[in-house]
Length: 118
Image 1: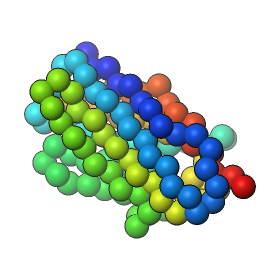
Image 2: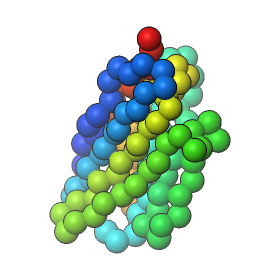
Image 3: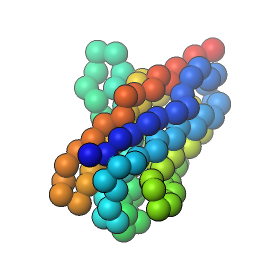
């Protein structure tokens, strides 16, 4: 089992910045993928960004150049970060942390609200 605990999020003005973090603990192995998804009201959940243990990354076109994903690792846990810059109202959503294990089992965080509004 993997436990995911998210932090960050909140209210920010358009053009502002915000950071999210998600700590993964439990049955953590060296091969994994961690990322962020988001879901706006009335819309399907969509990929924001992911990063694999091998270092490959992928971003949604809508966030390229504005968001940066990174991962830190220590013996007990992995932490995935999402730095969000130049935020737009359309970035408003609940953001979910995602962990995919080496056996392709998937885990989700509890979600954190990001609201971009003046």
